[in-house]
Amino acid sequence: MNDAQPKRAVVIGGGLAGITAALELADAGLAVTLVEGRPRLGGLAFSFRRGELTVDNGQHVYLRCCTAYRWFLDRVGGAELAPVQAKLDVPVLDVAHPRGPRLGRLRRDALPVPLHLARSLATYPHLSLAERALVGRAALALKKLDPADPALDGVDFATWLSRYGQSGRTIEALWDLVGVATLNATAPHASLGLAAMVFKTGLLSEPGAADIGWARVPLGELHDTLARKALDAAGVRTETRTKAEAISRTASGSWQVEVAGETLDAEVVVLAVPQKETHDLLPDGALEEPGRLLGIGTAPILNVHVVYDRKVLRQPFFAALGSPVQWVFDRTDSSGLKGQGQYLAISQSAAQDEIELPVAELRARYLPELEKLLPAARGAEILDFFVTRERTATFAPTPGVGRLRPSARTRADGLYLAGAWTATGWPATMEGAVRSGFSAAGAALSTLGRPHVHPLQEAA
Ligand SMILES: Cc1cc2nc3c(=O)[nH]c(=O)nc-3n(C[C@H](O)[C@H](O)[C@H](O)COP(=O)(O)OP(=O)(O)OC[C@H]3O[C@@H](n4cnc5c(N)ncnc54)[C@H](O)[C@@H]3O)c2cc1C
Image 1 (cartoon, rainbow, N blue to C red):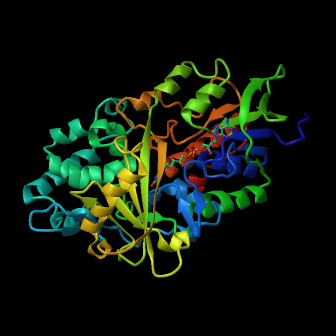
Image 2: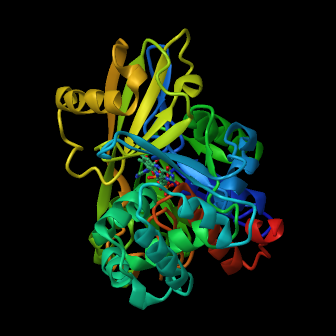
Image 3: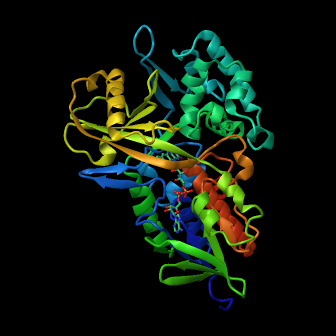
């Protein structure tokens, strides 16, 4: 190819990481082909039809501090469809209290950090006075930690919390309440580095950092329909149902990606697929120790979906204590459910013990629990009950995982890695996925000698 022709890039994997990398490379003038094995874009954050419902494979939320994912929403024209709440407000309902169910709220004030949470913590009914005082002490210590310090990666979060006097109850009612949902692991199984990242960024960076955002439309509308439109407009050739089967180097130093019936030639390849698939596709010598990728474990998330014949919940979502139920979201409007009924999704992270349970067993477990949490559910008719199981929802954020996560650059010129599981510093999130896409595209463009302004720097 001559120098006047644009450089060619192939992005493998149409999750948030791959879509981001493809948009960034196309915006910089490369001729980009994106290949995705499945019939749709969006990877682990997608929707499907079930009768009249459009169902998300699992409830997804993000925080105001997720600047990269918010860039993504803007870039695909979906920001208004997934707004952030005006101010952090999480109802937390404890149904195991000896004097009956108790509702508390995690909220913020308009005060500077960390006072923005002080009033909420001072009145949080699920902890004793002494426990609340000790939370303040731990929060101040957490603020001083550097999440990127490799020494933190090898320590588990529970050990650190107990060093700061956090009781089992405090861990359940506060640290794990947030940590399990964001890290997909309980404190003993979470790296202190990743936990510090989540709590520092979300709760201790800016007053509004932890305000919660979520899609008011099916995820597929954002991550598939709108993303596809943005890719088309950017000039990306997007091929779904197209699995990359092999990557090889040509004699001239460029790359060839084999897909069914075609060989794609490129100067740049971004591999934006999960760690196991990356391991299987990586050309020899691309990483010093490719076997390390297989050391990055995975963790499941289970969603239990219930459609009632009437409204049983008046909040958009809440978290539960004293119950196997973790978080409950009202999915009625976003799913397109018509009539008087209400559709709730229970989101169960770190679901290792439940992910394989039969539907009947999950039904027998969760319907009575919902009745305990929501009195209006007693006597309501169940119009539909089903579950979605994501066995490899996230990488497992276990202590020590940080040293296994590779950066975007490989040892092979022109070949880059992306995915929420790569070295983003974040746990497996939509934010991490988009950040990894930026990193891969940024590394590719700087190697090509293209000036590249990181979109987050541009926005700042
Ligand atoms: C149930 C559930 C709930 C979650 N909740 C949240 C949440 O609340 N907040 C949050 O921020 N994150 C959440 N996450 C995590 C978030 O969805 C992921 O971290 C993120 O979507 C990962 O994006 P990715 O692009 O890195 O990877 P993936 O989404 O895994 O994308 C990789 C893509 O590569 C494709 N692929 C694989 N092999 C090939 C091949 N050979 N050729 C072509 N294509 C290939 C796959 O089909 C896939 O589409 C949740 C995940 C799940 C499953």
